[in-house]
Image (cartoon, rainbow, N blue to C red):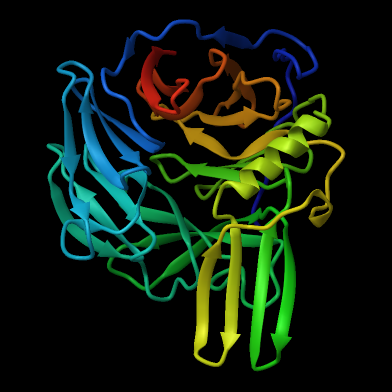
Length: 380
C-alpha cells in the first residue's frame, strides 16, 4: 500500500471568492509589456521559445505559426495535409526536450515534431493500444508522454456505458507499455439512443457547467490533479502521493445569463456528437446541435474551477481558473505549489483569456469588435 502525504492547511488568504484566512500573494495584471502586431482568428495553444518567439496554433486557418515579438514577423510552420510535416487539425503544443515542440494532430492520431528553428521534424504516431479519442496533455523530461484516456474506448473506458472517470496514462515512446498515473472525473454527458439493435444512433450532449477534474504534468513527471469534489490539488506519479488541503470557496450560482451563454455556445458550435453503430460499422459524425433549455440538467452552482482551463508553469506551479458569473469577464487563477497548497492568485485584465505560460511570462488574448484576437505578453 502506498503512503499518502496529507498536508495540513496553513494560514492562507486568497482573493474573493475564497474565504480569507491569511496572506497569500495576489497579483493583478494591468498592462501588457508587449502586444503582437498582427491579429489571429482563434488561438488554441501557445508555447514560448527563446528570443521573443512563440509557437501558436490558430484554429481559424488550421495552422501553426512562429510569431516573433521582437521582429513582428509571422512564419507558417508545416501545412495542412496527411503527409510528412503536415497536419489535418493542429491542436495543443506540448513542450518536448530542449526547445523542441510536439503539435498534436488528434484527427490523424499522431504528433509532429517542431524543431527549435520552426521547421518540421519526425512524426510520432499515438500508441496503437490507446483506443478511442485519447487526449495528450504533456511530456516530461524523460520523453514520456501523458494522455487522458477516452470515454469512448481505451484505459478507463472498457465498456459501452460512458464512465464517470478515465485513466491518466504515461507512455514511453518506442514501447507498448501504458502506466496508469491517476484517474480523473469526466464532465457528464446526456446520452440519447435511437434506432434498432443493429443500427443504433447514440447522441451525446455536454451538460452545462458540469464539474470535472483538471490535470497537467510537470517536467519531472509529477502530475498535478485539481479535484473538483472538495477543491484540492494532488501531486501524483513520482514517489508517494502528495495531497494538498481543501480550499475554501464561495460557490457561484448559475443564473439566467449563464444559461443563455451556454445555449448560445451550443447553438453556434459543433458540439453534438452522434455515433452510428451497426450497418456499415461505426462512424463519428459532428452536427450543429438543435438545443432547447429543457434539454439540459441545470446545476444550481458552478464547479469551483473551469474545465479545460488549467496550465503548468515551466517553474512547476499548477494554475486553475476560478469559476465566475458570465457577466464577469475577469479571469482569476489560483496558483498551487508542489505541496498542493495555494501559493498565490493572479487576476487578468477584464476580457482577457490565458493561452500560455512562459518563464516569468504570461500570454493572453483580447478580442476586438470584429472578433479578431490580439496576443499580449505580460510579466508575472
